[in-house]
Length: 142
Image (cartoon, rainbow, N blue to C red; front, side, top):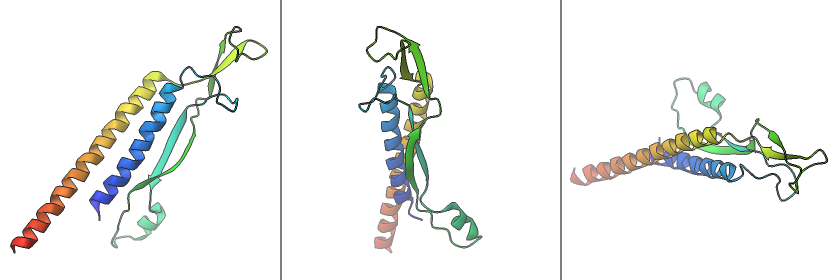
């Protein structure tokens, strides 16, 4: 098992998740994308590099995990919120403007949780690097 490689994949996934969260927070008051569609909050979907079924079928055999990867980015299920503002140029015929239904507090909570996961991956990477260096040092001394 290559702990440094696994933690690097985690760092990459969490960094991309942080970017998606930042984009959501920046879009809280946006009403339309450049194509004219309503803005929606996005969520990064991640999962293991290995097929989970294949890992389970190993049953006691050697398992060599490869880390995690981004599976995609999809619209959050929250949808949109409609605000009555007939003076807005983006208002529809009834005077409503569609904004993303982004929960600011929820996004900030997710941001903190993702930052903690990123920090944990950094810690693992540092420890794995130290262990590798120590193993090389012990190999030279023997």
